Image (cartoon, rainbow, N blue to C red; front, top):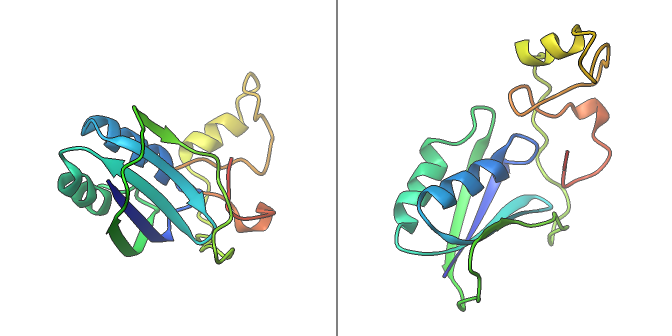
Length: 142
């Protein structure tokens, strides 16, 4: 079993759902969670090297990986891959991405009278990221 620590702009940018889909693709067991200033991934299976390579090369567009640490850990009895609830890590300060302009999808939602986000000015998604001006605490969860 391998523990992977990923530091950088990896919160509020769709990184955990990306990790989940990637782990499922490679049939890995384990979990991913936000931990203050990093994301922790614990995995076991046969395709871990390919998984780590894809973490780096196929990450969400607005994510930025500054550092990846790996270590072998004691095997856990896990039968699937999960996204766990966020927790504060040893250091609570994460990296918040700079505000990006609102994307076309969010604009469509804002101006669609039938959408629940109609005229809601603080909308954001995985493509245009969280807005620094409305984040109240870290780790950032939608």
